[in-house]
Length: 195
Image 1: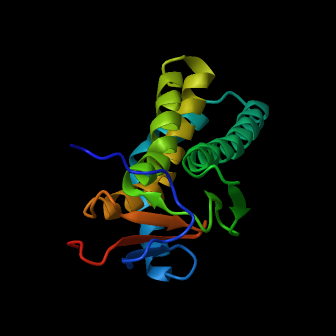
Image 2: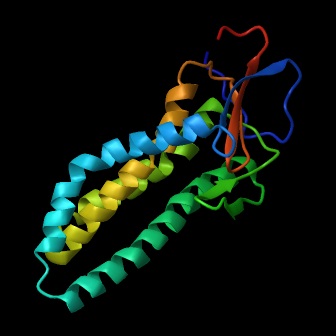
């Protein structure tokens, strides 16, 4: 019979050890690798984006479209982290901490630990929800399609950090615990668990 794992907890239980840490502040190689991978994901989209901008009639239209895109980018980032925050709140019932790290915006609940399943849902929520919304808007036609496609390209590539964390946690057991402090996260398993 499958047992239901509890919601996030606010202390690491006895018998758990750290097995992996993703440090987006101090691990320079990882930062470079994730950014290069995100750029590689973005590259196939760029010819379509440039074609769209080249097709704009005049400078005024280009400036308006660019301004709209900048506002949409900001809203997209806020919505992305807000979705992480919704699930952090759901699983911990604690206040979510939103913060800037100079180069990124994050949502976290320092001091709380999520089980693997809750972490997977929390980490993947923006990629699933926001990318599907933007993909749907790509079929609206006209400027909405071009704007949605541009946002989708940048959002999908910017999800690579989440994809990386999801890839790393896949090999650990269901009772793996994770903690997220915004610019770093760590995975913990029971000391007798297989790695």
